[in-house]
Image: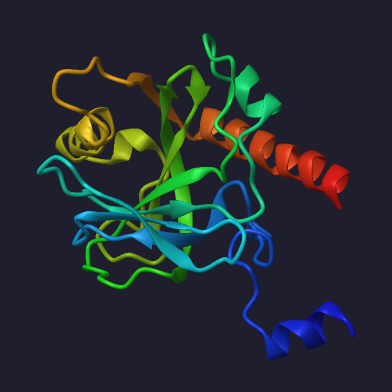
Length: 205
């Protein structure tokens, strides 16, 4: 049975069965796991591809934008090399934050997003970059091409969320945000994550 026949009968795995997109790294497919309305952290179960509950959010912070990952990416050794001070990649698909003027309250949706930059984040010595993108065709943000095209207050909200969403009272912070970067560096991270995925799953397959 050919892959196209299989895909017509069964839903593809969102990490392995979907693609980053033919225009990556500028425009990528993003599979959305969490919306700005969620107080529960959801993530795709790596074995089944279904969305599962990871944990309730401990703090009052809500995601300031759509949050998910770029299919067929993996944060491994190549991504680690782009994050000084990290011992390894986090072993997950590459995270992406997508800004949309119109509210989208459904998760498990696939959308096209224009990449404008990213956040360099270290989570317990692991590279955990967050790519920043805008919904393609958005009537407010659709003309953004660089992270500097976005309002500083909006970027500060995203940074605050990722700096605090894993905080546990009485314990030291686990996450260090070392800075923002523009499209050029984001493109390098996306290419590295695509190459890490190809290397990892070529060996496993």
